[in-house]
Amino acid sequence: MFDGMNLQGALRLRPMMASDNAFIESLYRSTREDLRLLDAEEDFIDELIETQRRAQTQGYGDMFPNAMYFVAEHHTERIGRVVLDFGHNEVRVVDIALIPSARGKGFGGQILQSVQLVASKVMTPVTLSVRFDHIAAKHLYARLGFVVESMQLPFERLIWYPPAPSVHGVVR
Image 1 (cartoon, rainbow, N blue to C red):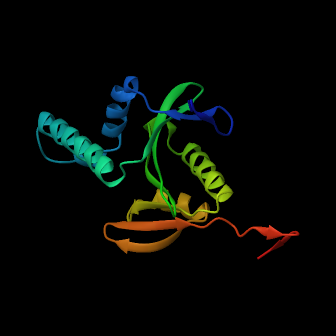
Image 2: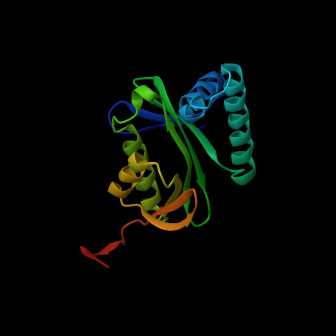
C-alpha cells in the first residue's frame, strides 16, 4: 500500500483519508475569501461556500474519476491538498491548495517540482488550469516552465513538457 512520498525537506504527500475531511473543508473555506466580500449575511455566505465545496467535489469526481487525492504535510502538520489525475497522455494537476500560513513559502513550488520529476521519468507533460487573474500562481508556474496552451476564460490551461532525453550527453 502506498503510504506517501517524502519531498524536499520536511514536506510530504500522503493519500487523503476520511479523517482529513474536516481539514479539507476548512482548507476550502480558506481559499474562498472572494465570497466573503459579498454584501450578504454571514450564514448565507457560509452556506454558499459549502455549496461551492460540494459542487467542486462532485465536479472533480465526475471529470476525473481516477484522480488521486493527497494531503501535503510539513513536519507532520497538514498544510494542503493536491489532486492529481494520471491520464494516458498527461499528468494533470486538478487542484493544489495550501492553508494561508503555508502560502508564499515555496511549498507549492516544491510539490509541483516533484510532480514534474515523476512526469519526466515517463516523458509525460504536466497540465493544470489557473484563473487568468491569479497573478502569483501564474508567476510560479512560469518560473517552473509552464506555458499557456489554451484559454477559456476565466481560465488558462498551462502545460509543462519534460526535457528531451539526452543521448551521450547531447540533448535532442
